[in-house]
Amino acid sequence: MNQNTALSQSNPARDVAPSVQSGPDSAQGALAQRTTAVLPPVDIFEDDAGFTVLADLPGVAKDRLAVRVDGDNLVIEGAAAAPVGADMTLIYGEVLNPLYRRTFTLSRELDPGKIEAKLDNGVLRLNIPKSEEAKPRRIEVALA
Image (cartoon, rainbow, N blue to C red):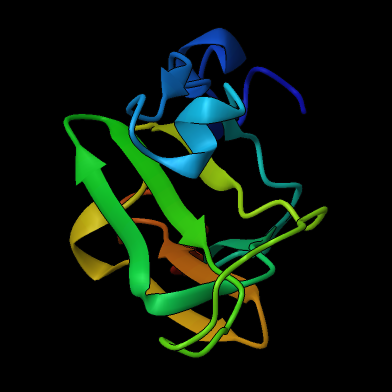
């Protein structure tokens, strides 16, 4: 992405959470399974009104998703979970339930107070409008 845009990716190294190991009493701890945050793939579109961000978050439910503005950063965090019954015990697993995290820097020409978010079939859609001052406008010229 062009670094001169109003929405730019923050340092990807900051987006990756430190490794977390489960406790020694859990099955995951016994297997020394480690969980790190992964960067969800995104597509970013721009028009005169603002930006649209599409982030792929497969397996993330609305109640396990957080989208927030922290200073001039837009932060997307979500935890995927495979739907299993409470009476089931995992005896073998290959499906990963990742923790997603992605951070973008918002420029001053965007209006973070009007960001809209919608989750549909594992795809998060963010509409980030430009502030009124940053939108292109036509100036009428009067005859003298």
